[in-house]
Length: 268
Image 1 (tube, rainbow, N blue to C red):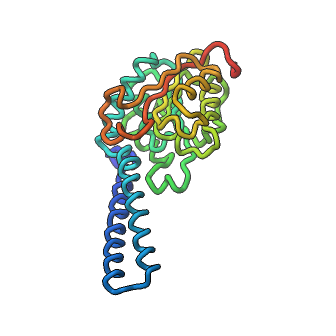
Image 2 (cartoon, rainbow, N blue to C red):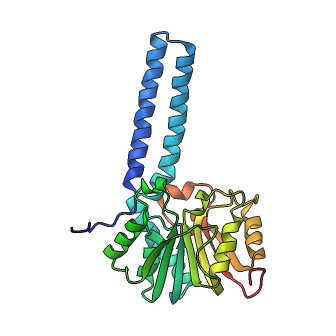
Image 3 (cartoon, helix red, strand yellow):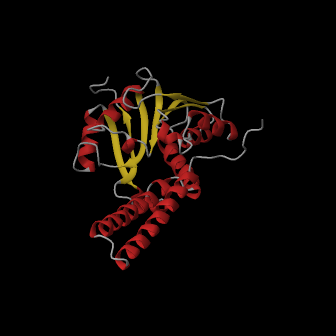
């Protein structure tokens, strides 16, 4: 059986969800109108109105987050700009890790940008994300289509307990994944990032900061990460970079966080 030749990073389902939310929202609006005209009980009007509000909020949220992040044009721009950032901080020699790889877009981008790199993508690939096409098999298919399957491998693992020895990688990246991991303080994610990095190894995280990191401001977050043994930690918002990633630019806290593992620190 011939494999698909088109690269797919799991974006079509997001348009379906956006459309479904809008469609149900419109239906709920009509239901409110009918309820008022036919003098239905007050509880029916309130219930219908509540559905409208909830669906509108959900639809707008989805449109500006998941739908925006996985729009095909946004993905192509992301690959270009992400590669530009990587070339500033890494020479492309050695092993790289992509945490929360999803459908493999960041891992494959690293492999294509750096022909000498060996890249590993790790994810839990839960059943829910499988509905979005985010699977290990999907990553492997994309790597074959992009002709980097000999330098990209994908494995199942938890970001809170990465299945790798200390000092394994020269680069760790993650895109739009950390905010999805439900823990009281996501700073534990950086403990794992620094554990698997070799001394002097670099990390580049694209996510929403600092919400969920147990801090009140980005400056405090940077200090806490440096306290774990990182050096040269810098946060740059998407707006500050001037990068045109569509609607993502306006999401509060969205930006790049980069740094390196130092020679000293509690993780050494």
